[in-house]
Image 1 (cartoon, rainbow over the protein chains, first blue to last red):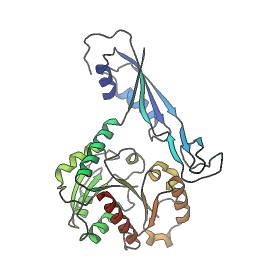
Image 2 (cartoon, one colour; image 1 turned 120 degrees about the vertical axis):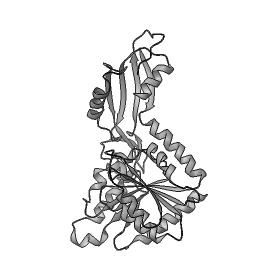
Image 3 (tube, each protein chain N blue to C red; image 1 turned 90 degrees about the horizontal axis):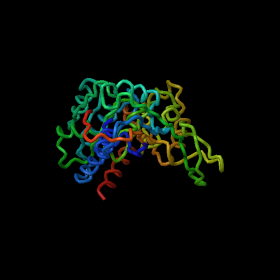
Image 4 (cartoon, chains in turn brown, blue; image 1 turned 60 degrees about the horizontal axis):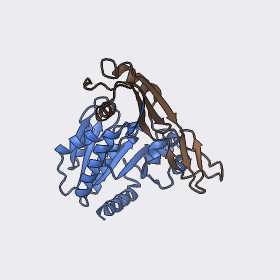
Length: 115
Length: 218
């Protein structure tokens, strides 16, 4: 919410109607908990009524041996589908926990404080 | 209208962690973030290490616990500086808490700072506190499938200490299986079997500490 408030004032944005997050499979954050927290924290703030979407992004590993990139489940213990290597894969993506974008009302009010 | 943001939700933590990294680099202090389940033996490992290496290094400890100052007391009994953070329910330490606790520590001439995290194998892996290395303790009274269950923790650690080896005759812990899975998650992970109660196997840990301390100087 601090980041959203910061972006909103920096870019002089109107009311935020929707926020989209990226939650990687390996980020260790439970999507249901984010949704619950959002619902619990936003009433009475400038984000009251703002919709939230959490996009769960896959865990992608790069094989230690053949460098092939492949999707794995969050358990990380995966054989490379190309060469069978089980050990030492690097995480390409899946640890991210980001605010990806927001949707705002088109008209930006000139002076809108609120927190 | 859609506006791209692309900002890390934990950026506030990362910003302070970077600040701490710079401070520790400037003061040339090796910082180790010690993590495990509750009861795996983090405090006992510290008591041993602080006592055995007392004459080699100047060391200090930041203790993270939900409640009580028991651990800071135990650690301070070795003569090392210790400061306690009570998270009062928080399941991990964050960088702002560590920064705050530094006010109670004298960093001058310090060689090694241990941050004993809250006992938990999940969230502490997500929150950098400015450390050089993450150290994970696993004890043989836990399940040997812990690395499989908590992959991120083992993926990002530099050392895994398998503690309570003196109890191996009495439990069904499969050391080879635990090590195999941990090494699949992290091929560079140094795995050491130790007993912090008897002191068995600790010399390789001390050797690693000496090397890490030396590497930080460069």
